[in-house]
Length: 184
Image 1: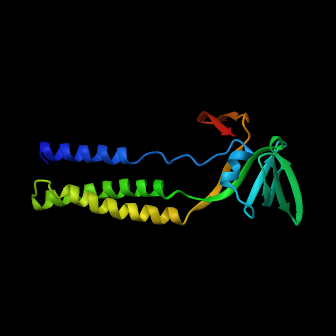
Image 2: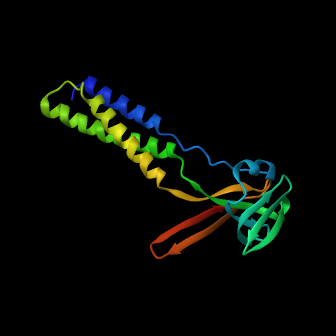
Image 3: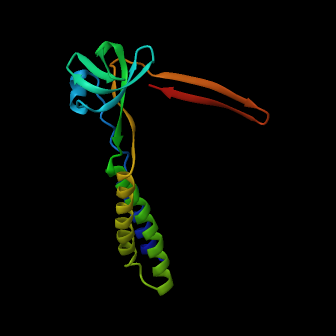
């Protein structure tokens, strides 16, 4: 591999790394007014109150000051100050899977292109073609996988709710360390 081919490989790897970015944060409401954009009547949610109790129900009504849920056939009323968090099922955003698929596929295509160019004695002009083809295939696979994924996400967190940090020592024969966890 000559100096120009090495430079191309390094440049392609840097560009692929820059393409993959952290997924956009999930939308999070800090007030019932903001929550009205994210939740509609009939949607199933989980409410975590200030005591840590979880209530599962279906949204009956949501105003800027109160939330009415149907829980086991009965209507329950919540005010914003009684709730620490609300969780709901949301689909995984397609963008992050597409970006990861593009990066992985492009990286694999880069390796295939380098191998192909070395085997046939090419100057390296085919390397970007392989990277683009495999990157496109990877992006499609990544988007397809993300389309199948949904998960439970926090969609409301009371303003001013604090994070809790727990730190525990790990002391066993031949092993020492610390285990830390953060909950919101």
